Image (cartoon, rainbow, N blue to C red; front, side, top):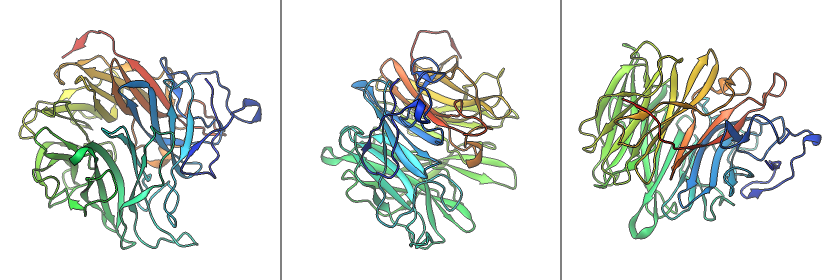
Length: 451
């Protein structure tokens, strides 16, 4: 595998370099050499001092060799992207350029990572969302965190400098942990959908929605998603066949140690939302991970995945709705009970309707495996879970545990395969704590299903 070195001083454009093991970089061969077996390193940066986390992935459905991964480098304190045009054999890296006066992309005021996710629009353009605060020369905040969006018009070769979608206000009010979805908009323009938390000195009690109908040129004012008594951890917004906007979020009841998984729906194009309950269980979400939401290609089915402790430990479940969220199917258990606890799930629905779900499963304390399962019948049955990493991931090495273990793997569906990314510290040591974004191309094969 050919790799390159990132030069962090250059931002907003594709960065190229020549990695050299003799110059201090990691060797090309090793346990992360194959994207089809065990996973390959999804960043060109090979310096031992690297710490990639919160990876997200998109793949071109017409050219599955074209893959883009976005993440945050905790060592450099920047958000960036990695693009491959040969299915992950080689990578080129870049760093998102922030507007003048904004701080770097790392930890926000609440201690979360600023990184969001990357999404692909119907136009083929790519969009990435993050949060960042405007600061003075002494790095003191001039205002609370804003929501920023960067756009690529050339398939991830370069990204335009990020622009402010939701400007920060009071330094005591911050807009954090944004998510982005992109669907077809009016006149063929990409419609950009954003969700994010509002946090203040008392906590993060509200979730909001914002959208752009002109591919990110302008954005609407924030609309409250979580009606009283509030909530947080919103999912990526989706739009169904009727034009209804859907976002899931969580309401936490500390008095009973239970969490309600709620659905917010907008029948007026995102101008206002109503709320209804999907589920209520002990400790939905491992920490502050959101339940994730996806819609079928025909827009008629909604699917949500989440983890909860109904069985006395974290397990991953899926529920589906065929009537726009009015009713939901019984929860389908997705992890093997013979393994350890499962958490931080994510999902993707491909053009042919296959539902791909990925999550972490704990093989022993602080050691994670990456599990993938899929359904070809709308979520009624799923394949047996397949472990995608060929070496367990010790979270005592790297940086995941230091940022709250709140960021799971991501998946993008393509014809015949799922592209899965996760953070992996197998090349790290007690000295380097090296952590990479790792990509696995998981081929769909006929396999026995379990109900």
